[in-house]
Length: 89
Image (cartoon, rainbow, N blue to C red; front, side, top):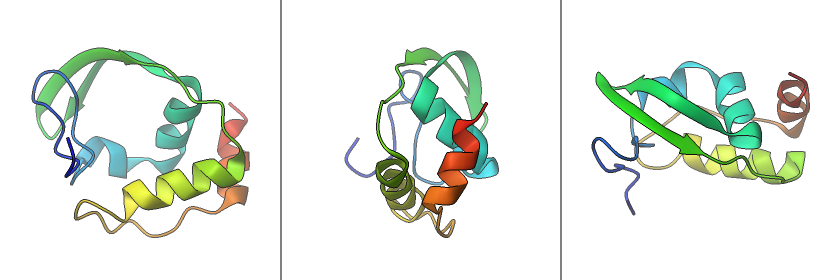
């Protein structure tokens, strides 16, 4: 949704997401490589699939910085070097 709130039971929220904010490396890897199956976000279970994105480290850094510092999130910066390190599984 436009404010990052997701759609309960279908799409997990990006806003104030305990799952997303708990592990930057995991968030980067899941955005690159995708994810499927159950995840618990803010106490609610979601079971779906997200395809990964084939983007550069700089683009991923920009994307993650937007998400991590929008929608009420205040998670600081992710550098392209952090993205490069996380890309290596």
